[in-house]
Image (cartoon, rainbow, N blue to C red):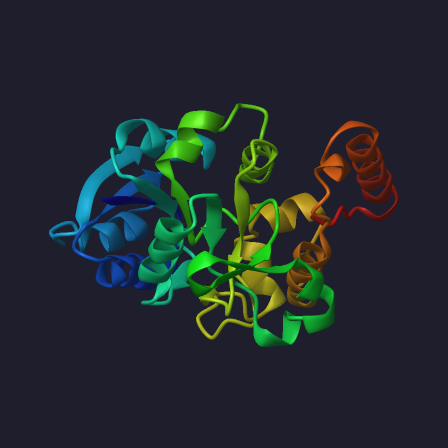
Length: 278
């Protein structure tokens, strides 16, 4: 059994696309859990349109915005599936997503958190990522990285048993790093399985066509990095793609004095420019 979480909030345009797509691409032994944050009527109505779908297993409504950590830990604690996942409400998964990742998990015991890829082809740098491509038994290949985005991934239950829930002071990224330190192999399946990230202004389904669109519903990561225009938001996406392709596989870079240096550098940049790239 595979248990999959979708957290919905206040973007009905996305939910009308993402939730039906998720339900339709799920195999018969997958269950979708929906946690809705807030009271946006249009988004609740979009969820209500699929409440009778046979793959929709549980629905929870939080009148306040509980964020991402609490719903994720809720799924991990309540679900009984051998594999667990989360798909963001601004993402559309490829139909091959779950079958491919589950087959890889079955064949490779060391795989921890493996995921679909959300960046367009123009962001892929073959030379940059070549040293991180690795082959595994069963004909599987990963673009290795110690963390992946918090959407479109598949993780073994055993990883969560070992690592535990996401702590109050950490992100999904730092949780993945904890898994990597325990020896689990994380990364993106390659050739890439596509995830259409609709928050990327280059997606054909994005709601961010103009700067006014972005200002009206600024994504959390855009707000935290000082982004204010569609051009800046697009550049942030490009920067994120380059960062993960170039990120070190040496775990020492994410702890101790190296981590403290990165944090200080980010704070200084934010102080002088108003921006602190992810």
